[in-house]
Length: 331
Ligand code: PBG
Picture 1 (spheres, rainbow, N blue to C red):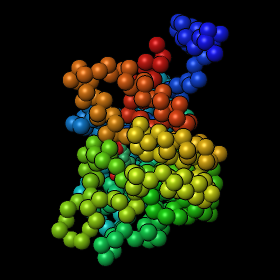
Picture 2 (tube, protein in one colour; picture 1 turned 180 degrees about the vertical axis):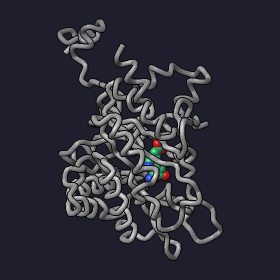
Picture 3 (cartoon, helix red, strand yellow; picture 1 turned 90 degrees about the vertical axis):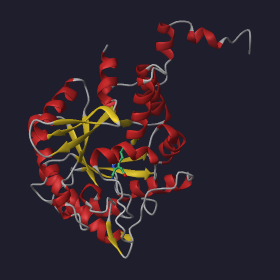
Picture 4 (cartoon, helix red, strand yellow; picture 1 turned 90 degrees about the horizontal axis):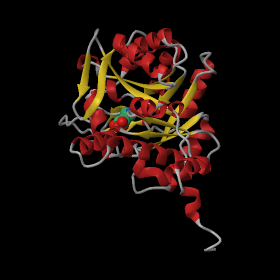
């Protein structure tokens, strides 16, 4: 009680503050999401994500080396597939020589210590921009899961360290685990996008991959709300994360990040495996846009958000800021 207790004694200068700081942040906490395109020696900036590029495999590999040198130890890989390869089955997703599979092989060859986590979901390969196969106007669950298993196996064969299902179909973690084990990949991990909300914060990502659900004139759902979660829900997130952990996920993820930190904390308290947070494209875009206008200090806001995500319970953070933040942390 005052005057015996004076909280400000622990805030008196940076040395004392650093002694009692409860959360630390390091480049090894980050995963960097990367967008890959066909071709050679090309990089195209994504208009709604300044500083983030779609890159061909050769340039991606160079970037991965740079990330590794900065202390970043994992990349999340997404591909932008040409329209003529898209259909309703998503079969290009498990083409052993597809863009994703080539990218995994190239990265693992060039930087073997970098942990490669390809995205497992059909949306980049779907003519409708959905994460699953559509029948009679609905995304069919079990058939989609079988397709995801084929996709994940092709990633494992290409050398992926983890597969990262972001589709939110029911039962996919169990089937993926069984499929990987049976095919001789018991060492390949699963990072499950467990509590993935149907969020408008994914807008810039869908620009990057041209993967937004399409208005086709046919009876196709115009959003992802029958599989991604309702942002009004909390208990459901815990249920999904606990189920995924029981089904064999090695890491569960909450997504998006900053608006969902209550969920991060609760999931963290509910499971005994690492919790990842995806600081998504829209969160990145908001900071870039406001900083461009000079409305706040970019680096300070970036670090505050990353620290707060970590404080909420994240063991690792997938963030488009990984490189910039790693550079700042090295200073
Ligand atoms: C697709 C996928 C999405 C993101 C990661 N994987 C978009 C979506 O579900 O529509 C979003 C990532 C971001 O916004 O940064 N399965």
